[in-house]
Amino acid sequence: MTPTIVLPLMVGGLYAAGVYLLLDRSLTRVLLGFLLLGNATNLLLLSAGGPAGLAPILGYSDAEEINDPLPQALILTAIVITFGVAAFVLAIIHRSWRLVREEVVGTDEEDRRVAARRAPDADELDPDDLAPDDRIAGHADSLAGDAEELADDVDLPAGSSR
Image 1 (cartoon, rainbow, N blue to C red):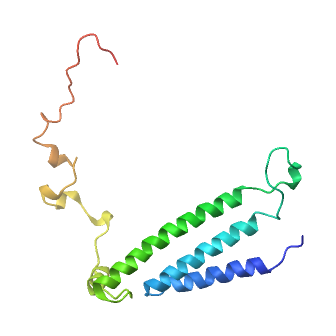
Image 2 (image 1 turned 30 degrees about the horizontal axis):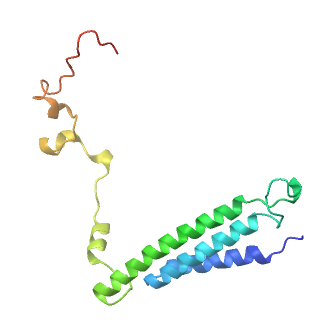
């Protein structure tokens, strides 16, 4: 069997169309894009499995003629995962339609405000500058009066050894 360019082009086209649909704000298009990505993955696994062969039943045929069952198992797993995620996205679409009568994700101004805010990095924070209640557990000042409560002594029965 000679390799063709058809399967790689189909896989690439399905991946391109799926990614394009995933980048839209419409949840229905996101679902269709995800389904295209799932089908492209299945086709990729099928084409990577090699040429068709005989059934892998013990003693039925020679080892060189047996088909590899691993790609088929991976495709079945990918189908189940795609179905589960598609059902979840359909539930989100249904919920969005019931709440706001549209399934297009809008722009949230609060998200834009939070994204524009500059937060200090962890390297810029000094625990000594924080209020004692806001300091991390285990800071030197937070353990000052709790030494008796943090004692590690445990009463073990006599004769027990660890």
